[in-house]
Each structure stands twice: as C-alpha cells, then as structure tokens.
Length: 351
Image 1: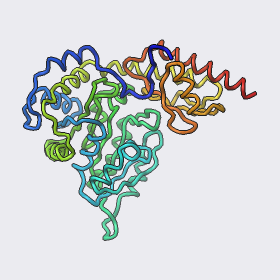
Image 2: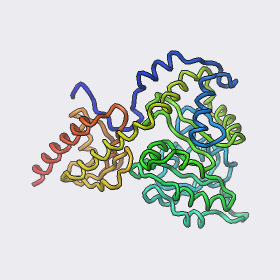
Image 3: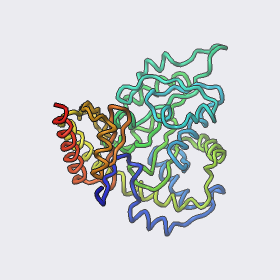
C-alpha cells in the first residue's frame, strides 16, 4: 500500500490546520458549565450571529446537537416528522426514541427535499388516539442524497406548513456552509426560516471536534440542561472552541475547492464502464455512485484500498466518496486513474 493514503471516506477525517493547533494551545479557558470559559462564549456568540439566531450552544457532535435540539422542542410521546433518508433517522442510534420517548414519522426524501404537501398530510389532527406532532426536521446538505442542497424557497415552503400548525422546524445543518457556498448565498438566508439549527465544526470546516446548536435564548437555555443531562457539559472546553473559531473565520470560503474536486471526481467516474452516476446531482462535496461492474461495491472498495485510496460501500452496489480539506486535485486524478485501471481489468475478465 502507498505511504500516503487518499482518504475519501468522509470529511470527518480532516485534520486541524496549523492555525487551529496554535489557537488550541494558546486558548484562554475557564469552566464552561459555570459559563466562565471566554473562548466558548466567544464561539457561541459568533455562531449565533452567523446563523442569525439569538443564542448558541457548543456540543460534542452533530448527533448530540440534533438530539439536544429535538428534545428541546418536544415532550415525551410526541411524533417527529422527518425524511426517510435523514441522518437523524438512519445514523443516530435511535436516540429520539430511546432517550426522548419520541415517535419518528419518516416521509420520502427526493433530492434531500420533503414534499410540503406530504408534511401537511402527516401532521396529526387533535385526536385521543394520535400522538401530537411536535416537530419537523430537515437536513441541508443531505448526506444520503449525494450532498443535495435545499434553497431558501424549499426551506421556507416546509417552514410555512409547519408554522401554520404551530410546529417548530429543526434543521440538521451539519454541512449548512456547504449549502450556502454552493448556492452563493449568506448562510443566514438558509437558516432564517427555521427555529433551530445544528452545524458541524468537525467536517468540512476541519476542526477536530464539536458542533453548535443555535436558536432563541429561551430554547438554548433549555438545550443547555439537556446537554448536561447527556453528559455533554464540558469544563475547560475553550481548547475545543478555539479551533471552532478558526474554522468559522478561515475555512468556510475554501469549501468551494471541495465542491470543485467533487465535481471533477463525479465527471470522471461517470465516464468509466461499470459506474452509474449523474454528475449533475453532485452539488457539494459528496459523490455517491452505483457500481454495475461484476466486482460490486465491496470489491471495488477493496481494490482501491490496495492502491491507497479509502472509500465506503453504502450498499452492495453503491459507493460514497467525500472531498475535504487535505484532498487535492492530484488526489482526484490518482483516484480516477486507479478506478479506471481496476474497472478495465474487471470488464476484460468478464468478457
């Protein structure tokens, strides 16, 4: 295997920048549970302003942020409407049900979107037999839908339906800055209609750990208690927050490079035999493609790994690759050459 790996498994594998490491080493710290860590306080103020919300809360991860976010909007026995391909539904260990006592009502995700008419139809009428519809959750960008982007009109359409019924909307915005960069808009354009939003510092923004939950002051006060309940009350967390501040101030605009590399990767893969992919669907940094060659997804993943390229099979016939800080154009070209060579050999053997 080559000395240097090209790791396309996820943008969670990013390493902190030199500036982040310096900021972490020099961070002014205090006890955050007592509200006395000045660096955490500065990050939370910055995050709230960036999202156009009143207040913010540093949490350990996007999963914790979503769970705390959902709990702070709902009460036990409520039903939560969300997409059937959403991260909360697939990858968060059933926390809403196990910890929140909540029932999830999944609706079809089409390119990351949930049809507002289907949300309207799913909202429960007042009836002794029904759970109360307590929340609608959306995701932007959409992980399982090739990093699909929701624009302001789509988000507003969903929020209008929910708000007409007095139901809040939570945005899983793990990669919301990717969406804003792809659309060429201020991130607040996408977050203003929703009641709360979680975004990750540790994906494309390259901080080593952490996410931020944003909403109203009253809502964040409630969320702070839930974070403590879940074991997320950290002490001298300024060493984490310092990297997050660098991420917000220096790493947002460079997400465009990841999008360019993803587009190059998608176009190249689409030209290969045994690959099924529409490059037009790749808007941000996630490339999901079908493998129709006899090698299958798992076989192609293994063959690429032997050449020092890491990626994940998400189904027997599907692979996911993600571009991020640390992945250069030359890495994309190397990946495409390796995939071309592997598939050419497979197709010759299959004749």
